[in-house]
Image (cartoon, rainbow, N blue to C red; front, side, top):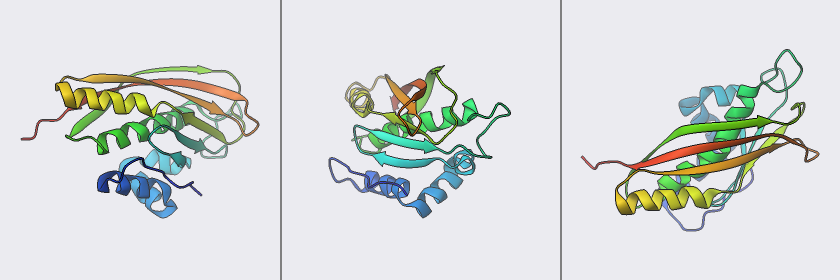
Length: 172
């Protein structure tokens, strides 16, 4: 079950997004509509506030490869969501409409993932700063956000860095 979502300032759009991500039933609906593969893989948002997001990917028949570890694409999906939820939250709280898109991905794999893996990104401020910049200037801005995947005993299994691009949408 997901942990409570904490927001620094009340905002109806952000509150709705947070509610979808923290409520197990609404999360399933959101994933079915927007990210069906994440639903099938069993991703769960465990923590989300403006600074930090933690997402889990289970080790099981839906996410393993023939080498008895979590498939790298399943790890990448959880890693992306840990940064993407923060990026989505930043755009929801923006004063103007902002589009987001991944423009780069870096990854390293340190150990076999053979248990539940939790990806934690603690760089939400980068997304909020980039969104604020694009709203202020009207020019695209980027944020490179790192996330670390750990097994239940704290062993690092993978590190990912996603570069998100933010662009102010035209109002017409």
